[in-house]
Amino acid sequence: MGISEEALSAPPLDVVIVMGVSGSGKTTVAKGISTITGWEFAEGDAFHSEANVEKMRSGHALTDDDRWPWLESIGEWISDKEAAGEPAVVACSALRRVYRDLLRRGRPHVRFLNVEAAREVIHDRMDHRSGHYMPPSLLASQLATFEPLEKDEPGVTISNEGTPAIVLERALAALSLRKDHQ
Image 1 (tube, one colour):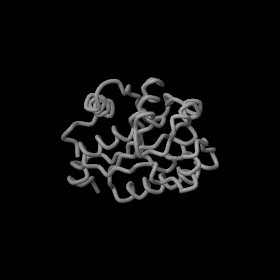
Image 2 (cartoon, helix red, strand yellow):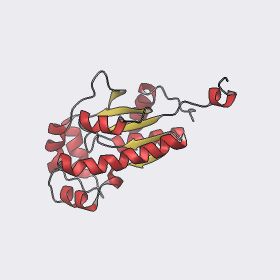
Image 3 (cartoon, helix red, strand yellow):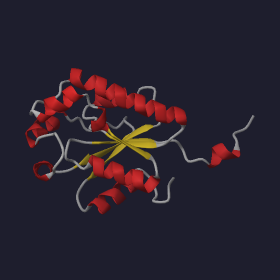
Image 4 (tube, helix red, strand yellow):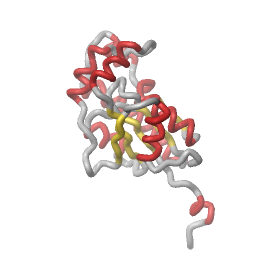
């Protein structure tokens, strides 16, 4: 039995995790990808427990033990999207290789877009943004925890230099997504 014409013409299933330290611009990029592609967007911060949010709000870095349940819940959301055959984009720090491995485990359609920006730029953004619980004092711990994508991980890294529109264009190009991709 051959592959149906519908299956041949359907876009490949894709789940993109836009990653990076807090303040790198990952949410802005992920929302832009969602808007352009029509894919469902999930904000990884929304999956944190209230205890995690309060811990960060009070200036304390999360431990791996704090992060595992959070990452598992994001992974479950991704699994639901894959099972439904729905492409999606998630903003999630995914700072360490072991976190990314957990997010990919059993989820073959996941790939990463790492958004990088200079420390000074990120700190300035964190200083001037409103409505976010992550204080600039935690930037150092985020940077210390961060492990760049390795060559064997499915993903690409882009710079967050320029306007949001330029960064979004860079992201779409790096992911081989076109504005008319749906």
